[in-house]
Figure 1 (cartoon, rainbow over the protein chains, first blue to last red):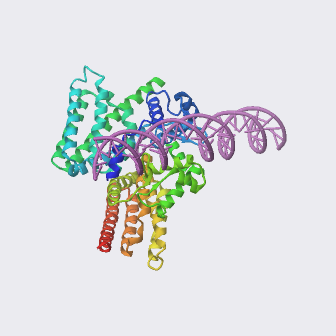
Figure 2 (figure 1 turned 90 degrees about the horizontal axis):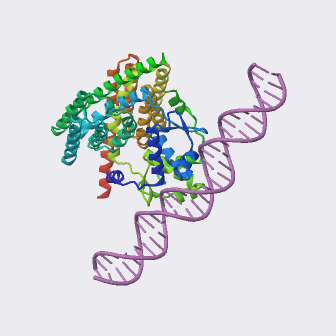
Figure 3 (figure 1 turned 135 degrees about the vertical axis):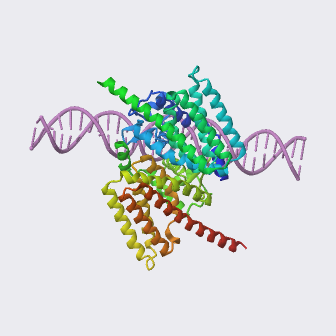
Length: 238
Length: 238
DNA sequence: TTCTCCGGCATTGCATGCAATATTCGAAAA
DNA sequence: TTTTCGAATATTGCATGCAATGCCGGAGAA
């Protein structure tokens, strides 16, 4: 346990490998590298002015994180994000996160609970102003990610934290709150508060249930948006 | 989806890195490298007669798989397996595997189901003779691992497969059936059959429930054995 | 036209040497 | 005696060059 925490808190030195890692991730998110595009060690090394060694190591990490996939002797390819991926991630979150908050009910300490309340407040403040400040959606998204992370951390299960972080990371960034209407955001905020209420009451079943609702509501919105996009796409094609 | 399957089936070329990877894993399992022992890139490279480069890459994989933990500027240390680790793995399996079999109920095809029945039969045959052939326990353990893997694969969720495989792999190897009495093995075999019955009936709730029982029973045995070992340890100390 | 085989080429895989950096241990000062 | 500072040392991090290997296209044969 002590070792695990030390590993979590250990500040990662900013080495060339991490620079390359982050740079590639950014380029994927900014659509500089497109899905299914091959990217080669040599090219990236040249672009980022480093040797192939750190690039190579960064590739390995990105592959294990799912950002790239390795095709032997052809290079690494940018993974495409499909509806299947969304479903897979959702199915897993739908059981792991409710379990995590149920565990958190008996294990979370006062400090973390207060921090979570603070995060919830910040999100609520931004939500009130989001109709006149569209750019707040990004801040809400970041706060929301941290909120969920802290919630999971309260479960006192280190493997669960890293597992969920790996699974959620890529999806959260690609799909933020840009499609939420104000009423949906408000519902989401109420869910957050209710989760905290359940934890404060040490009521695992309640916490589990409301977290499940929270995720189901989010996936429902996602599916609606996807449908619209697909129909739009179809209309363009014809 | 197609890519995922191709990636799963792609035969990994036996390169120096994989040799090093497997060699280190073997030495950990054979207690050549002991828990909390530091192992250095240079030393391993010398022992295995390769340069530090493939050793370095193997280390990275072993770290992400949980076999080693990196301590900056001190080397990589062999991870110790604690009761906390066992609990963490159990908690996660207890929600993911029941979910997986529930999904498998609606998605599993005939071929895989027949394969699972075959695996179950093989285990039952070995179980009958295990009292006079203690060495069969290893075979049962291997078959059991494949049984669970195939079951998960039936969920048609690729992330779930890799996630569970990563989490389970290390624990399964370290803790096999050596402590099961014949009656416990038989109970375990009945669970397997009942899971298959539930899947054949396409009854997700039933499958989920019996898988949960299966895991809870296994963890209960594990805890009893651990208690015995601890008490024994304590007796030796005094 | 189509199939097969072979050689060039692109890409990854590995070895080696050097650079950077944190740790540790000893010496000197308070 | 304790604390602090510094240099030696051990370790990881990175660059570069070469080796190995599988792919792809063109030439030749069926």
